[in-house]
Amino acid sequence: MPLALSVPVHCRMQQPSAEIMRRALDEIEFKAPIVPIISNKTCSPLVDVNEIKDALVYQLTHGVRWRESVLAMADMGITEQIEIGPGNVLTGLCSRITDKITAKKLEI
Image (tube, rainbow, N blue to C red; front, top):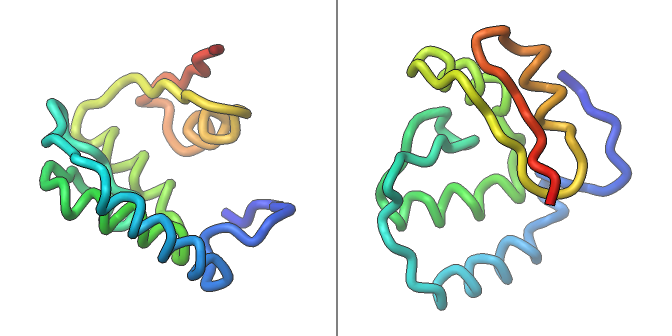
């Protein structure tokens, strides 16, 4: 699903940013998550902190597999998605991908 974007996100032009992010993430002590993190790299649950860091860096320079991630969540029985942050793009996309997940925007 092509998206109209005004900045070069999720592409090789972000490599310098990916390197900065890698160094920053390496300085942060991560703890294993209480619930698995669904990776936009693998479309599967991650619990290993190093794999999570790798996936975060990877998605800066590669396409995000959001559709496949949402479908994987639906297959896992997840029924609600809450978007946190600016905008509501992911909420709208989720609603178009599946009716098995209710997508909501958390206003902060």
